[in-house]
Image (cartoon, rainbow, N blue to C red; front, side, top):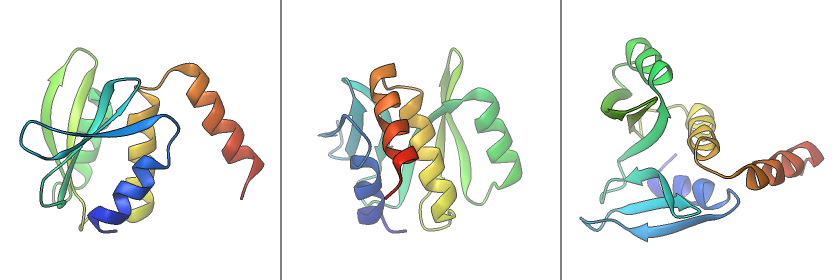
Length: 117
């Protein structure tokens, strides 16, 4: 998946808005809370995750995942978009969104996914 395709996936989640970050990079937020940052050249993605998930993914596949900063129970995951598996990347983006979105939006996504295409 390229950066443009990934942007479509992210913006397809309920309530997501794209902003311009301090260095011009895309920042994705839900209810004004950030959950993903893309590099300006669209090759890397920083995703919100739980500390345990960040540690496990980095240990499992250091060519794709790198640790970024951490605070409290959350740790940010640095992802090489081109090297990542598309389906895993979709799941990680959705999980980052779920860690940030309010319950009513999560319920909305779950209802949409259970009704199928």
